[in-house]
Length: 246
Image 1 (cartoon, rainbow, N blue to C red):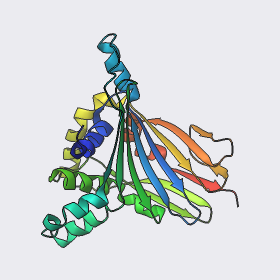
Image 2: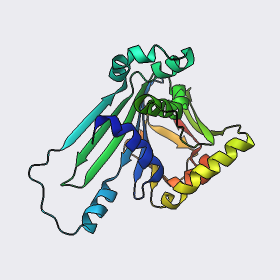
Image 3: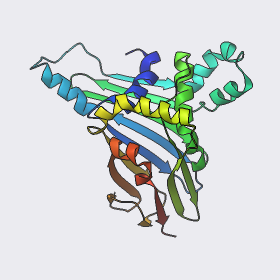
């Protein structure tokens, strides 16, 4: 797979592939900075495709692919053409600095995993994650094409309390129709895909309002299981608050 196709593949699998396991990970520091990592695991799908093909010999020549797309480098390479864009577009692209997409592929083991990684100084910056994905696709493919969404994520972390809230966007009738039409082609795939939360906190968790929760042994990591269909139909299902011990 060519590196220039990674962004497009990531967006397609997030929206349309069955048997995907999508995990939204956050590694949070005490000062509110940290790392966001959206992992798209397609191992189950890859193994199913392999089984459909019957028994096959391993490709002894095949080399495991670990590919990295660094948008800071891409912005540098495209600086001349980007300089001709509007101020708004240039500012949007500047926000992609520090974004990295990693891809691991091993056909013999039936493994295909994509990680969409962003470093942030304040967890509130994650409200722009979807806009960044749209801008990344626009930069990589040279086209403006937005992912359908009727919500915007809001995050906060202060006084040992973390919040994740899906805020409903104000949409015109035309935008609602456009959203509904876009989602029709993806609905048939939603049931087969899971959407999970894995948040790593700097202190043990005292309590949470989240449902379907499990914890790590030291109670610093929270795990929540859901499905793509559930969070698409009812985005607020993953609204929750986490209180940390002092």
